[in-house]
Length: 231
Image 1 (tube, helix red, strand yellow):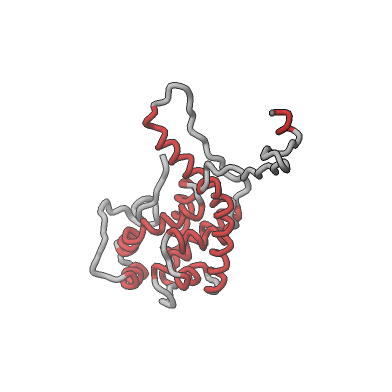
Image 2: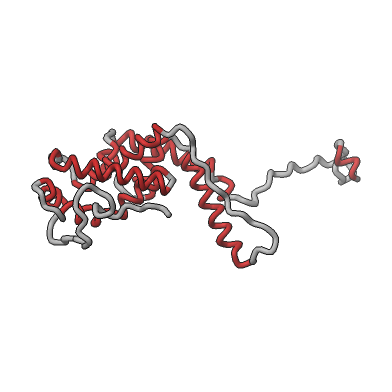
């Protein structure tokens, strides 16, 4: 079963409360400040507020649920411990996402063996109605494999900008690079993806057939090797 972090009550370093504290009245900065001052519920509320996007960024960057869960947990533990050092030079969400992305990038750089994806078994007698679902799964695998082939910096930029919808400026802040660097990484990554995903866009595209030259005065194609033998 995949472990999906959902808050500090799921293994993070403080007492389990058994309750979900969303605290909609306080801003992100107020929650982080409250946590730094010792509020036992503030960090839990902050994580629950942003857990879905943090998880999506981790999963989009690592392309593996188990790896993403571990990276996200590492990132949240780091954020939990570093809350007192937050200086409000950027938004709390930007700060959180930067920690998550860095945790993912560190995990990728340490990875020695690329993970393999087990393909679903298929055989005779498979119900016809499952073909669409199998096709969708095949498409998802192709896209995932294409993303895996991108350099990690391009993958992170595309995940944030194209998948999560962050602006170039916010992405630059999260990744700690210039806006021009984000644009360049996205552009190069999109070009690479376009090449890798070409079979999905034109699955039935055949090679163009060059017309045979017409024999002068006969109206019939001129003889040419295999074609002549076939006639």
